[in-house]
Amino acid sequence: MNPIFDFFLDAYKSTPTFQIILEAIAFVFGIASVWFAKQENILVYPTGIICTIISVYLLYINEYFGDMMMNFYYSVMSIYGWWNWSRKKGSKYVVPISRTTTKEKIIGLGLFIITMIVTYVVYRINDYDIQIANYIDIFTSGIFFTAMWFMANKKLENWTLWIFADLITIPLYAHRGLGMLSLQYLIFTILAIYGYIEWKNNLNNNLQTV
Image (cartoon, rainbow, N blue to C red; front, side, top):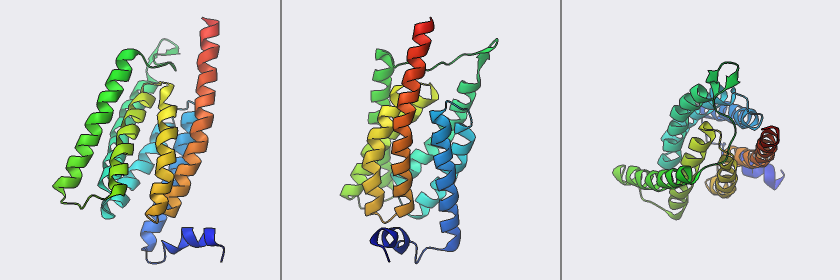
């Protein structure tokens, strides 16, 4: 069989069928969520919530606590983002696409640092033997945490953070033998690049009409 197919299939030979089905569902809804985000469509949140709730369970039983925490946070932040994106004043949405201010960048840096500390503590509390891959996980958790907050507030820079962290996560999941999730993050990266371009064009067009 083709080595590429072997890579994606071998990891699932001993995996229970229900876990494979759940991962496939999370895969589809995760891709759909990023696609809707690219389109600035509020469906990014209900599809994302389905993906993250399933992912929390799958990551928990596999003891990837850093990623599990991030997906739990995504679920909570998705509720906030859903509310924030849907707010209107008259016929106009209250939250337009914009760039981060200096204050928001500082807040984002704070979230990044706090998230890494909390994620590390979670590993230690669970008496987990932290390996190099886990330190990478802790680092990307901080980036993803900040990216999700930026996205909930429609900040253009959220896409830059997603792209950077996705590129790190692709080989990380491949190393762990999670082929389907590795492929998912590859697709996330491609969609995030298009998302950045579309949001940037949208922002530029809005500035020209002001």
